[in-house]
Length: 426
Image (cartoon, rainbow, N blue to C red; front, side, top):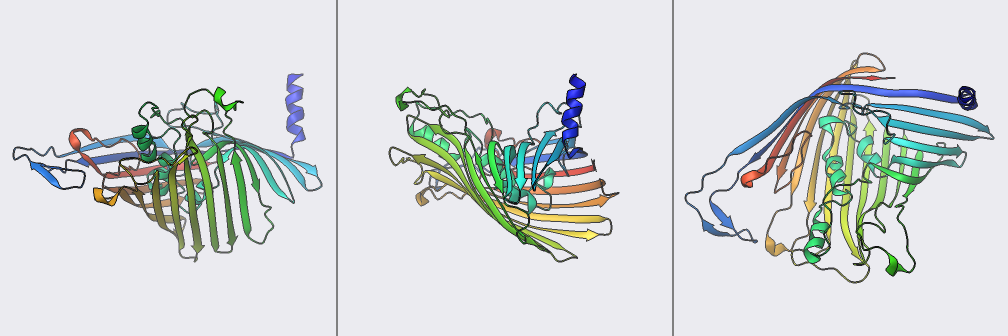
């Protein structure tokens, strides 16, 4: 009877597809930090206050690792999707997509964390429920020649993923703990709404609008509300954290594709202090295919903002309760026979909004990546990518792999990496 029930469910679908990607690469990473001290000590304004003639520079440390990785060209995955024709132009569909780690087999269909949605579509568009990409992440990956995979992933995506982490240690939260030392924010990262968001309700425009497309999205925080409000437990991040609202609208016709997106993610809250920490993201991306070459570009602006419902929060070490992250990307792909050359340059800058009297430069980083993909068939490809990140003023972004060694006062400088691999899709 169980077997007949399963067969009945399968036959009710107009189509059911098993799909996936298996991607493996030999990848290497390195992160070099240096001791840039010269024996002088400095005050908050950057002025020298003393000199130690016996100071011995501790030099540099290079942390490196080589591994068999996966997902350096396309993320490895296993998925199931299906559609049922309901008649009258209506269709019901599902999409379950699981991340897999084919390098060691330690991760598979135990979780459908990449995507798990059910939807209803028709002439009105599509209503989609479940876990899905956020509206603001689409521009990061669509307008990146490397598709936010491997060592070539653009810095906007790399920096933004940690900038918008739940319970993160962004500067606004650090200032919060300085002002309220009796309310300690946790430092562990419990999740993020940067690339994907759970518990979402999304609406997508129909595909027959002459090239115009778009989506709106809302994610429930799924926090318990109490009445009266004074009954709310005095715990952090139990009232508003997890909510996401965003939208993306664009135009694609012929060689041109351009889109703008905005989203707001609630990454932390303190109910009794009346404080809510949000990351608001705006980005604009575009691509144009000239035939011999395809150009890509993106501009992104994110703000980690601490809102107060009760009063204006001020801090002794900053003149604002927000931190800004600005980034841009320029990329190109060039088809060469059965292959494709890919290259990109990305840059980010973190504005801590400190008083100018501190005279400290804002952290920033840039990244150069270049790669080649050789298609053996429509489903199988060989690829190679190399990339290098340069950090300044305390930025510590890497291409992946080990973190910088900052012991003995060393400063993060450069990170390099490579991927050589094979991708098979089915």
